[in-house]
Image (cartoon, rainbow, N blue to C red; front, side):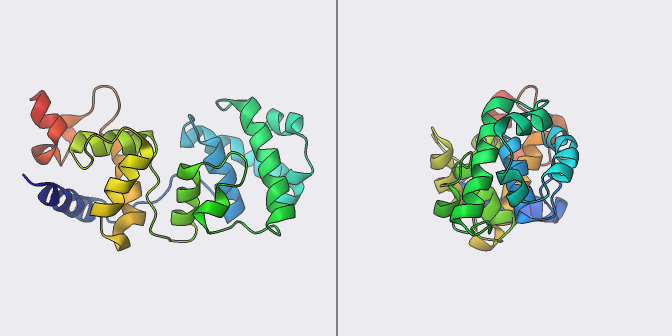
Length: 212
């Protein structure tokens, strides 16, 4: 099977079986999604959604968050992973958003990465989900799933995987394709003991072929 054929079969499968694929993070504004994605690093979306209920009650916008010290922020996010670092990032992000970006979340990936706590993956998520830009955020799920299926080859870094995926997935599908791969990795192609028997793409998956 050629790479082009594998991409086509994968895309066809998800278009038929997961026509609607969206983030599982709860948010009502670009600011809220930005906070949630920063919190989601090494943390489940389920946990983040629990944390942000009280967090957004206390810090409903960047301006209110910009006035808080990291110590106060920590108290609201201490049940997530790496709360010390994330509290500093959130405090710094809010200050920069208010004072350098006129309280407007930028849509440009390079501008987004200037914000504390925002790496390329987070910037791509915001650009894709909020602004519907053709971006491919590569988290641990996307990195693992794309390699297992055979969509990426010898991609040693998330950026390398992103470049291969962007090159081979039609631009108009990148936004939803990001969610296809994340959700597939979260519920089917899990890190340990992937559910190959329940997987609809096992027939053209390199990992399945190798293991079976």
